[in-house]
Length: 96
Image (cartoon, rainbow, N blue to C red):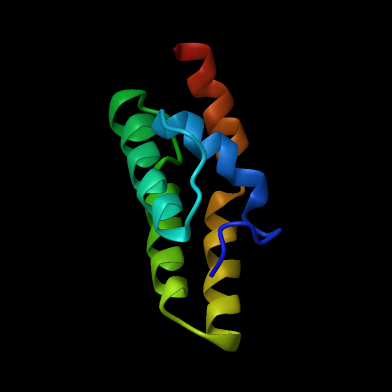
C-alpha cells in the first residue's frame, strides 16, 4: 500500500509536523508518525481529540495487512478519525 493515496494525502504534512519529523514515505512510517503525533498533541500539548490519531493508526495498521474491500473500508474508517487533524495541528503550531 502506498502512502500517497488521495484519501491520506491531506494529512501527511500535518502529521509530520506534529510528530516533528519529515513527511512519511511509507505507510508504516505514517502509522508511526500518527502514534507520535497523538502523544505530542495529547500528552504534551493536551489538545482535545488527539486520541483519534491513535485510533486512526490502528485502522491504518490493519489496512496495511489487508486487501481489497477490507483495506478500503479500514482506510475509510481511519480517515473518519483524521478529519480534525488540521485543527489540532493548527492549535499545536500556535503553541510551539
